[in-house]
Picture 1 (cartoon, rainbow, N blue to C red):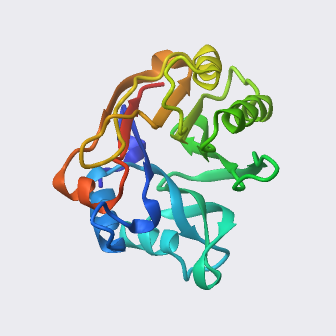
Picture 2: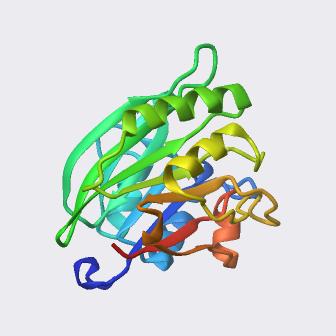
Amino acid sequence: MANPLAEDLLRVATWNIHDAKGWDGRRNLDRVADVIRQIDAPLVGLQEVGCGAGDDCDVAALAKCSAYAWYALPTRGGPEGQQHGNALLTMLPVEDVTTHDLSVPHREPRGALEVCIRWGRHRLRVVVTHLGLRAGERRHQVERLLSVVGYDPLVPTILLGDINEWWLWGRPLRWLHRRFGTSPAVRTFPSRMPVLALDRLWVDPPEALTAVFSVRTPEARAASDHLPVVASFRF
């Protein structure tokens, strides 16, 4: 990977890896690691990734494959005591990490991982999240997310993750677009033949976004039921 501090554009990715299970039903973490290496981004947000306090988890293994540091927010338990949630892989220096609870009663726990990083002379805030399956959940979660993220004109904010919003006219998307500017709708789900733009990236200021695309290689289609989304930013 090129030195991320020497680049003019910052490359960032988001990917719901579905516990490393592809459309073929097989769990294969090596396939996910190969795609992350191909993406070649200094910052990669992950959802539905095995994570925990120690190094014996999926996100630690993925980080080790490409020399990333990693930070995670477990949101639910899994089989054999494993935990799953959101994570950020980073090759950039980290200054602060905050977690936010976005859970709705009687629904699957959800959260947001907020990481402040340094990219050259810029201080950036990256927020990784995964919203709920029901419209009412998402409305509550976006309201909560916008209240805790706040606004700082001196610190650009990148929001990324699986938003789970297929209603393009739904209130959660409208609220997010109002706060961050319109996010391009890149189809990511299901990976074999994507029709829904569930995975998104926003940035404040919105003019910093220069490009957004999904990774549609055979390897990416096979590794998860979602496709990765990659964006480039210039601050």
